[in-house]
Length: 264
Image (tube, rainbow, N blue to C red; front, side, top):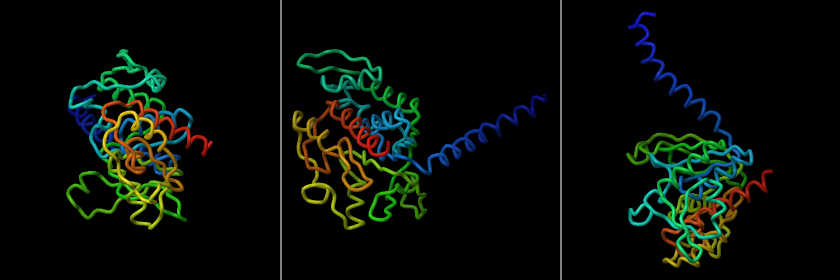
């Protein structure tokens, strides 16, 4: 083959390969069992267990690098802590850990976050980065999907209409801001399954209470809408817990189990 022609074909096919396969991926995910909003550890764990159960799941994160606050560990010391109760989940993901007394284990935050993402994708979950979920699909008083746009579109304040992705269940894993729960309550005049009917807002740090309550608060907060991770703490008004991540992992597994039970 002529070398010049071969080079030109490569240039075109590099672009064509990316464009065609990306849009095939996007089209495959226009109708989901579960849409997860937010790319933090709790949502990634949920994606892993949901996909492993055979459900069609996609996760949408506004950042270039999904993983939430787990990458940075504590104050950019890239180590994190988990407790004994979450160790089975750590083992499921094949993450290395070191005992550190009193039922605590220390892990490298970069390895941990990478392992979560790798295993979730290899079980069949699709992760879309640079996506912002600006609204939900709300039909017959049920949360029935998500409304997505490119993150730079929203950051620049451009007037560009979004796309709709349907889902049987939506998980709010947006962390401290609990953006999806706030949006659903504000725009539709409905009551969430909280003491006030609205997002209460997280309390100050208490590791023990925070770890317990983030799992307790993981639930279906409104028909079709589930909440996990720090979003569960913010919605229910429970304490934050700092750089201990066992509750995050257990919350992700719990929300997956709730949805699996409902859909399967």
